[in-house]
Image 1 (cartoon, rainbow, N blue to C red):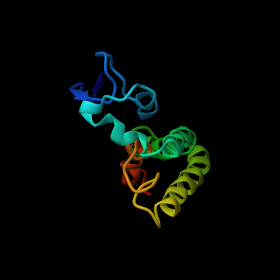
Image 2 (image 1 turned 180 degrees about the vertical axis):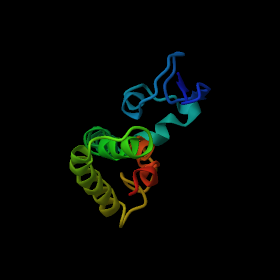
Image 3 (image 1 turned 90 degrees about the vertical axis):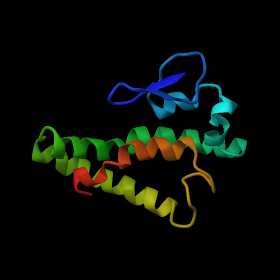
Length: 131
């Protein structure tokens, strides 16, 4: 399977069969493609696989606020009341991630998983939201 970047260039993903998927949470549910290194991002154990899935679910509910504040700051200003509600939620999410990786290098154990990739996809733009 192939990913399509923001500038519409195909990129290799973790899913076979020639389709296109761009969300980390969807990619995780595709079968691994060992020759592309796909099994590496699932987690080393069954427990880590479930933890990575849990993080992707959490990301969709919490890290989304980072993106909302960033969008308002960069592209289209939202009402101040809206940002006043979203910013503390985003800051709490970022604080939770910070606490999680304080004593370990990644969100799930000692190796990068799809959880790290999924959360980083929104966190990479933190500075644009003035975090």
